[in-house]
Length: 257
Image (tube, rainbow, N blue to C red):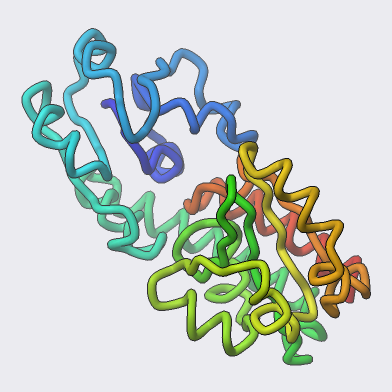
């Protein structure tokens, strides 16, 4: 099997693919699972030549453009990105791979971990405090909701925390929203906690924004309640990735409550 995405789901089901995209190899939580797995290139531009040499019996992809070419190599399952929340996607792949019971067991184990963390964070959750996810990428600024990684599924779906109302209105339906620097006080001013991500090509702009009063005067910044996350740590949403992220998020919230 070669996997164009959803590698963590496949690994969580106990299957090691023969090939996976390059971004997977940067995630610390997958490393112990990837011995012998070939890098098949960028997830949005997979090397068809490399995939062919691996002779997969099944291919899984989110890329509709690549689907037509991939299905000529081997039977291919196309699951559009964002079509399913992580639980539903894992169950769908469990059906495809004849691993439905493994999927159920995996989700049950994760639910137990969530319950334990909710107990430890009960005062933060019950306080009604707000948390927002803000990311700087190149020259663009983004807010994130529940469905685009960055810890959103854990924060909002599992732990039951909320974002400021204006963030929920602008970013939750689509999963993300682009904003301007001038909008930071309006969008993030009510946040008690902030998750901050700076992608590699946004480093210079990140330094500039973080030095400005429009950022420094945000309530969460002034109170020191900002967690700068690594994109590699928080990019994926699957039981393996989410378990890792749950620990980091919980440690942050406990230390700042």
